[in-house]
Length: 555
Ligand code: GLC
Image 1 (cartoon, rainbow, N blue to C red):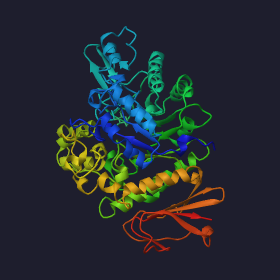
Image 2 (image 1 turned 90 degrees about the vertical axis):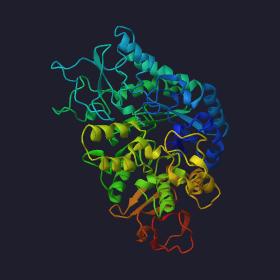
Image 3 (image 1 turned 180 degrees about the vertical axis):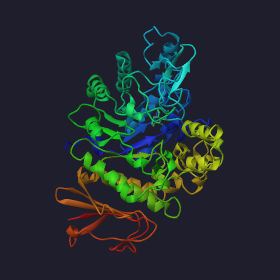
Image 4 (image 1 turned 120 degrees about the vertical axis):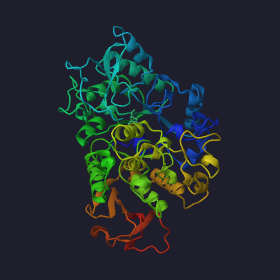
């Protein structure tokens, strides 16, 4: 397997709105990130993935872009952005920008022109359709943010497609001019020195011709008609030929619903597409038949099975990205760990998993502090369009029980990850001197960066240690992976092997002690502890404490 920088790197995701506010308007900004560059350096990460900072009316917090080549007013100026890039590069950190090109904002000049002038160059930049002959919508697909994917434009007298909010019209990738406009924009940023792109819902850009309805229901899931669509590989190969291959950069595609077979094509080294994908299978284990808001308990054997499938699936061809949360998901310690008594231990255990599976780890801001979900009491405390639309769809118009829907949002809503980063125990966690755009998690008094930076046993220091270990031990990046005890309900156990060395990773996913059965083929060999999340005092070779994790090197 080819050794490359991006396989060895650790990526840190910044959601700028909630990272650090430098000017007291309650919204995080670029100068706020600049203030924290030494923090990132101390943590030791190699790459920053910056969620969108482009001009945007913020219907979906920057994922609705009205000008791709300018900076959002609330976040600062192009000069601030340039200073940020220089500051990162001075510290040896690369910058990966978010590329959101399935859709733009409805306030983007292309869309404004497309509405106004169907006969202009922009007339065909978006997906416009007439109503069906019986006057109904062009098809029955449901949007990710509730309701139909179609919105009527009085002015143009047609419907436009929006897989997300009605302020996020989908670009028409069938139109070659659209594709080339996107490529030009990518070159604009690459020529400014960015080191890569995280590509937003990139496997949704190619839609099946004719945009067929799914069955006869008035509203239904249409994802089979746009996930890994018919021309997706052609489009990405074209993008690679025209842009990506001309630069030495990192790429990762966000791909809801992607299968292993497709992922091999997206990331295969001989294919000329992308380097990594974000798959979603492990994010769906706690969703029932009703989807993400229909919450069911997840089970460790299923979790292991999904991760295993991807570890094996991309072992020879392609490469995994490893993540347990981001700005769209609940906090990992609340979801897959224990955010009560064992918060610190389970945050470290999950970190161990993230850094010792094979793939490139992505750390989401605040994860390195073991930040947790938040429980806001009122729907108005939530800001995320996905949660708000769903709530109104179900409760205000649908008559559902508000308590049940609130509980789903508290567990699963995206705002869990979007509360401000907890820097210290001063007002608003040191995030802002004004009023934050979204509430701060009240646990900032105990959980904050300042406290953890000075505590050698903190989650922060544990992340630092894992990241440093990766630099010294190629086995963490390149070692072959093998799963042990796949059916065990609380123990997650696997090995990584590179040449003569084997690492054994043991993780106790439970609040109970769990017996540790040493794999027979490793019995009698010399084992030394590389890293563990409990003190060595009282360590029992045959038993793991609640949420205990250990990594052994065996020779
Ligand atoms: C991606 C983003 C998410 C956004 C959506 C639409 O899933 O991560 O935050 O809402 O795409 O752009």
